[in-house]
Length: 120
Image 1 (cartoon, helix red, strand yellow):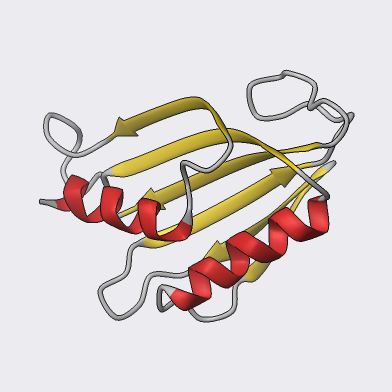
Image 2: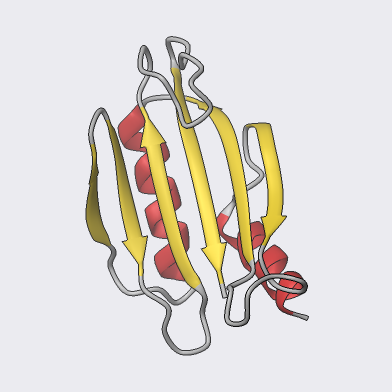
């Protein structure tokens, strides 16, 4: 049930846009009590960083999230949307072209690395 809810929300905010590099669930059954179920999707998107960022932040707010908190991540940048009104916690981080993404791969010119994580 939780996984289906996370999948539906991920689809709504556009988690699978671009070239998908990794997608995985973690936590939940068989884990330490209280461990959240997390869906993580890492993708490579073409376009300017500002446009990619705005598209995803707007989609998250359209799904019901309040404006996010900025999260310092060194050369990357990210946003944290706190869980509210039945929505899971959402984090979105961006890696600009020329920098190393969360998989330690260099993001090519004209692209942005995107890591989306939903936890409930």
